[in-house]
Length: 143
Image 1 (cartoon, rainbow, N blue to C red):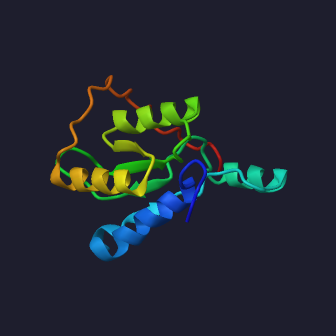
Image 2: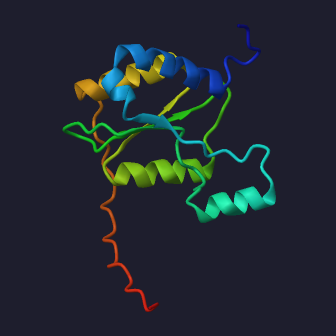
């Protein structure tokens, strides 16, 4: 396939999962994509999705496989000319500050290498500001 500006994000992500499935089937069982794009959705669909947890800036892929250094890994896929939005940057920072490894990959090869490094423990943990202590859950007054 030929692309003017390289493969699009969908194709890069597709190639990554095509590699992951046979190479690390156990890891594939706990790796999934997060459909978080607006696309061609109606106002009603977007409202329903937001009410059920749709959150702007969430990375494309989550790998729920902890290592000695991290709770899990998130991958944001971008095309060769893609750029992170401010909302995406903020979300990546939030996730990293809570002990997740986050990477931005512009090719399936970058994502594959990031996962291999993650599994080997070769990705150093960034110095992030301490996490805020969460407030206790509110007690429901409804009966």
